[in-house]
Image 1 (cartoon, rainbow, N blue to C red):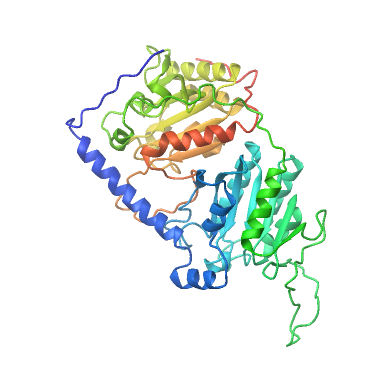
Image 2: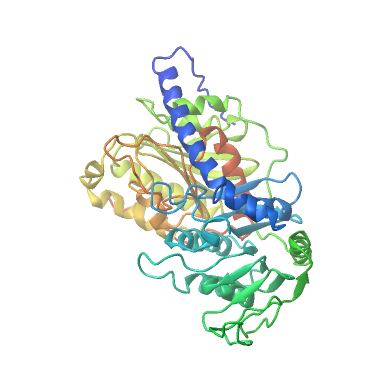
Length: 478
């Protein structure tokens, strides 16, 4: 057992300044989160409630087990774009009848739940998380379809992803709460279990068949009774009397999944807390000298970290620990370019993690390094690491820390290499770029103090699938 000793004195130069800077960024993030939670605004929220309907987060809360956590994903998607913050949809992971599920809930108070490019990307990311982690998916649907065209239409990608989940034997549930058309209209037919709210659920396919002429004779009428496209599921499996009844029926469906995790449970329960205060994490992303051990001491169980090859490749820290009882291997960089020593160390460690079926946590610190600095590094040093990361089959989690946004500097730990989850700490935006667009480069920007909790929820989720390493992940070539 190796306990990290990283006590930080608040009187250290820069401590209060770095903390203050992070708190300012967190205040900006909280303001964006408040805007996302406000939906379409007071007028539309009041109107929605007056119709006896629930808001998306109220639906999610009622669906989940009481007092259980909900890990919301990309809550400020589209921040800085011309679309509403949050992209008119809520996605995340929560526990339903003891089963961890991915939940997707349209927000009908925002343009009627209209689907824009950010909405599509956010929903597809949630479906991808459900697929790779073998998590059942619950869709809470109420959407008017595509938003006003500002580019290529969203297409049928969402329906395709849902169909693939069913093919992979990952259960899917769809509850339709109101008018739903466009691509979203296919979700009830493509889901394993379909529930519709009587008198409110109205599903209009892209190519509807007229039921009867409307009063003015101008087109087909959508019946109050459920209308779904013909398919393997046919009409609604169950009719709910109201929204609360629909959510009760959805919970009933999940209870009958007979669902079991394929990955091992926590090795230590209850897990010991870190020995150091998480408040210190507020000062670290802006520190002049970054040491990932200081972060690890505040998120790992008992601050216990067994470092691997500590005297070799010192621009990279690797080692073993536990987080909320789950064993993990850590690969953390200090912000500099790699030499052959760091590459060899990383490749060897990733091989060992795969040999022992151990989840990998990549802590990516970018500091003030520029893209040009990294491009100037000899690509021959990085090629073996690219092979190792690409071929590794154990779950990968990535935590982005530093002054560079995740969308600009992910390297082999970024979105392109498909980590199971990728979260970022708030970063300082350059003054000349005040209108940065949130294009979902990560699964969310989090308060550094919540890092341990967020990663613990992710580790529990990835263990819903089998945790198995590849037989061969790469060979180092100097």
